[in-house]
Length: 236
Ligand SMILES: [Zn+2]
Ligand SMILES: [Zn+2]
Image 1 (spheres, protein in one colour):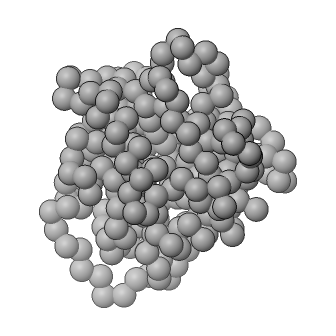
Image 2 (image 1 turned 180 degrees about the horizontal axis):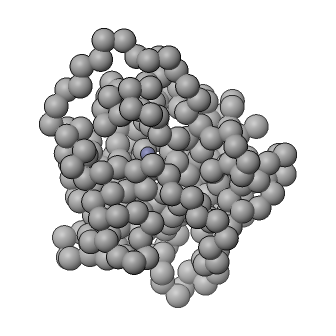
């Protein structure tokens, strides 16, 4: 993959991830809301979220999974099942957002399998790392998203063709609630949502505004506000 642009998105820290589920963060009143999706140029999201196709088409969001750096504690089958559970199946999930402009399709093979052929056609790669490696987009114990291959979106701004969600293995082997929230949060970055500044919570719940940032727990998937913001403010 040719890296034309690489913009790390603010990330999770392992110790903070543990804190998220160990304590209740008290908030007296949320701070004034701020934009929680990217409005710059290029916009930090995948181009294909703007477009809906028929059947399994080139404007779908194909995704793959890969245990890129493991210690045997996470199998390819488990990673595959947990990403599917998070983005396709849990009660509130990303797939189907915006009247199916977001149409997520899991490739049959792992991200690096030669059978995938032209991997540039895969919009989102979910790769797990047990230890930091030179190829990872963020440090050990951290999950993050980077955006690659800037192109015109056809919507008056530039977007990206390829996203990589770098998932810390320990985030994926945590509880069901934990991995759902983590993978949902990182997937939110691939469709343009941003992290808040600490304490800058929205007046409504968002999967991007989690207890790590001093916000109320939004649940384990995209909220109704996230889905409507994506459909009405980011996708058009
Ligand atoms: Zn765009
Ligand atoms: Zn984030």
